[in-house]
Image (cartoon, rainbow, N blue to C red; front, side, top):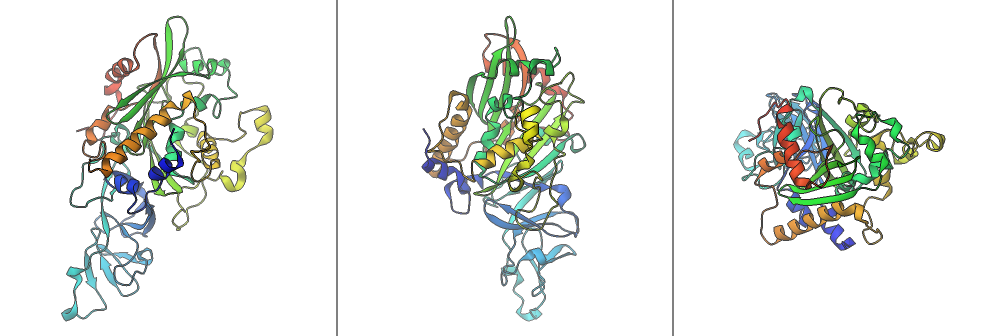
Length: 436
């Protein structure tokens, strides 16, 4: 059984920590492309415990760098984004998106040494509405991960973000726990909430699924399965993908492409990036997943502020008990809290900023959580011994992962069914970027 000692190894992500060092070997989503305007206001970003600044220059390039000016450490958040770079207002030193010093405005030309000064800047990339950052060795930058949801045309995509006030792994594990769907999100539902064509009704007929698990190149795959009438089984298949990605089975297999990154801001704050493509109105869906607003976003949010944790905060939050309505809880819904994301936010943050692994009692229904922890701890141990982290150098393998639910003949192996479903549905998605 994992302990708080193991938890601390995985939870702490700042510079110099074991997990922080491993996570820096991966590309991370950092922001929506729309957050940065050419010559627009700099944006405070925090990633892996580092306080950074993001901006878009006059040519449309995005820079992400340490917020401190390398001259006297004044914050570049207050800088002027103009004419191809970010200029510190303290003494007029100016830096481009790669951290090169372009100008030392307060130094006479014969004393200028700008070629020796470099702001701490990280490689960035953009794809389909997302800005990515690589914080590892800047001389050895891997290709972007070929996660299917990030390849779908931006116009057909829905990118949703929200801040969660807890550790990144704690947030991720909520997506690996599929049996909570029948309680937290659907405890009030009965079979008559669903149409006869919607196989998701089997999830409320049996709220205690059994599980199949497989360790996969991208991380791990789970299948929760239940009886679905004579000779049939109802499957819900999802994934953990290194280092902080999840795919949940929140729609019929093949009608949705989904991925979520749980990006560590610091040890106690996480930014969720949820990327979803859906086919129309998800033919015949009447129960879980029918409310696209609840799944895809359009969540109530507080206005953005400019502090380190001021972006994408839910209006229903721990300060107002997530707007719980006890009358609604007694008479209408299971929780009295509106919104799937808000319900998840409530239970995950209520555990505290770091779950006490010494206190918890994991059950058979938590097998995917224990598998993901074991995979991460094993990868971290190997990394500390000099091995490369899983998937860091094979980003194309992510493309093999897709989630969803379906009905199938009973007695068939999970991965056999999974491979069949992927083959059947792979060509249904409008890609904007071809997988490599």
